[in-house]
Image 1 (tube, rainbow, N blue to C red):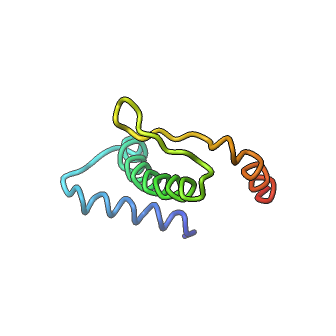
Image 2: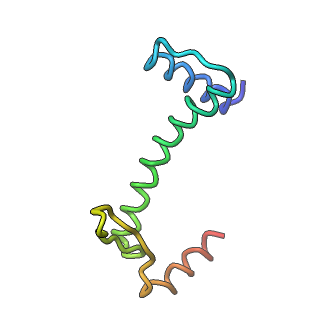
Length: 89
């Protein structure tokens, strides 16, 4: 088995351990079980990436009227951002 298949197998097993009464179809497992885990994992990674970008002053964080944090580009760092993106590609 390749690494990706093993990872998915473990994610399915973890879901079943967390939800021992769960049962679903292939489509349901993909849509609900695995997507939910992926969203949770990605949310944490995005949160950490945004914190890094804010710390480096490439992105600005502001509290909106809805009391949630809104992120936007730091226009003063535009040239630096473009340079970073060019180095990465």
